[in-house]
Image (cartoon, rainbow, N blue to C red; front, side):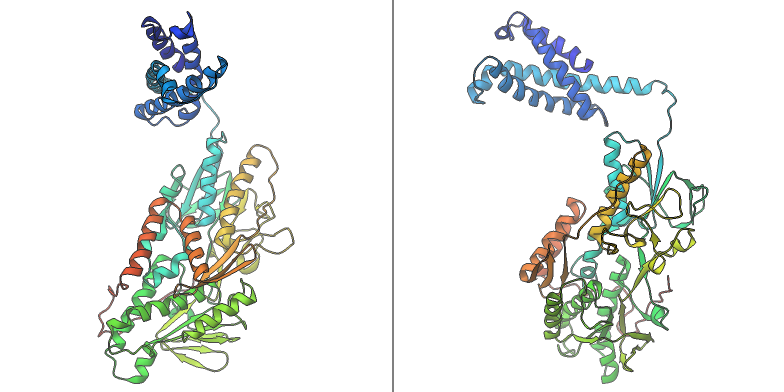
Length: 556
């Protein structure tokens, strides 16, 4: 208030001395000072929480001065005088001196406010109780959503000191990962840096070695001082589960990270280079056979994108005819995409089959070698590319915790997302087993993890204030799966979509959900360039005349 009153008195007195406030009576300067006091209060409310510098404070005061002139001198003052505000040029010209005074007063108030805040902060602060410390482990959808929610709660007056620990310094937008593997998107464009996504959260880049629940400490593999906490949020996600099948962990490619997507793209292109020069028909057929295990979203999108990548670049390889590449999807159930309705699953199956993609339904993988994938019906599919999307399990970190474990080692939580048998520990996302109202379990999807992150932040804040946490409730909005060739299938609130319209909806929805305007623009440009130009075939791995080594992937 004082930052507005002092400049208000000075500017008001100057305007009164010049006769610019005569229309407001003998005490026009007092009216202006009262108006300036209100502006000072608003300035403290809008700029006071985070005064970044004198320029920001002055700009804030200038904008408030303009807003105040519009609201008071152009609108409320005429109404109090019994006239109707017109907001015309003539009305604005009549109070033009007040505009100059309001802008000058607002700018001076902002500068004075900044100086006052700096002086106040420069004094020795009184000893105050440290803010409760919350540690979030995991930088996926759930962890980042929780961190951002805590930042908003801090702005509303909840004092929480938040630290986020993750072995990756970016949030990966996994729904678009298959497009990176097919070369349709640049990998960095679907990864948003954690420090940008949650700019006011303390970030530690590292892998967690263990959690001491009794002492409430998080220990990093890099050593150093353990991170203490009052509340711990586990959002460590999941890793591929190879089901202890012989050879699968050693010879299968996965699609869980940017590195996985880039490695898969490099593999396909390198095999095309090699097959273009291969004279042995049997070896050539093996090099051009691509097997994907798993008929869920990840597997279906992977086989569709691999098909698009291969056929979009075949014109660069004149020795390979379009009917030579072979694509096989192996799925243990009788229909693909169990997350969608039977009608949409059948539509997707028909679309992919019409392009020549083969399906082995009701069949399981029993093992793999460097040259083939074995199935439980006795068939061995000769291949040089085997992609595994048929199983995930929660992070191995959870095995070290003393709490109750659920399916595949997930942390069992109650409906408020609080872990059983572990004091002040919460869990969200793929690593948590979360019960719904009807007794079922919430699925491990990005849209659920995002809402769970917000809910856990609200519940932790409530507990810190001595209040009861609220049960998590959320009903899925919809799901979409890309089928390549500018087609997709999905549903929103039970309404089905398929074909080009579903593909446009899929792209529009996911583009809007990408974190940050910069990422959205980059992805949009990638899509435009993908239409206008052929996909890149640059291979940074081994040369075409060298054997293509299968990457060793230890079971995690």
